[in-house]
Length: 111
Length: 115
Image (tube, rainbow over all chains, first blue to last red; front, side):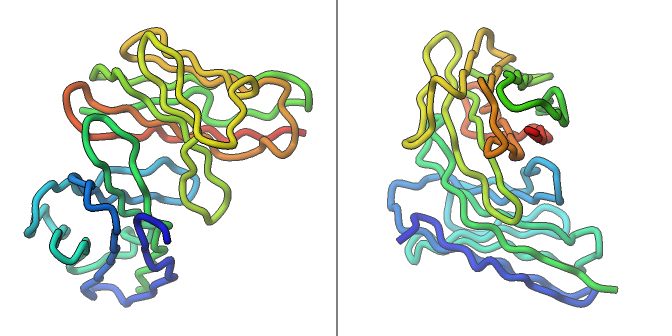
């Protein structure tokens, strides 16, 4: 079993839809959780960074962490074609340790 | 802020030659940098952890004599692919951890093609 599981998709939604991206993790030592967006042939871009259970909002993006069920989510409101990318969840135990990535979910927002 | 650059962005080389890739944190210091490789439509695969002033820590299955890593300063790490072969062709990405935090920022990647 991978430490971070993520549905690879692809996920296709119409413009304006609410997108829900999800990951589960198994390592109880994970303390920090991130979501990265990666466009084709580019490096990952940090979208959200959270360290406690609950919601964190930034513009159209909301990151949600439920440590009791080891579940992390990213919600995208009013999705745009420019949101089409691969979204990677990642977790880390802390102290500058290496990230553990999910496999990434490929999202396509269609006009 | 928090910009990481990589140079070159792409490189084509002949089999048997060595290629050096630079990773720089432009506006912050990073004691720890990571090197990844990524194959098409796959997630990032961690190759090694680079700590400033010490030897890199390689992941299992990664040849340290083939992928030489040097982290000479708080803003620069280099990855040298020695005696490159076509199977080394990949997208190499570095990341840097902001000093005293756990936030990691990624470079734009370097596409290596070995002929």
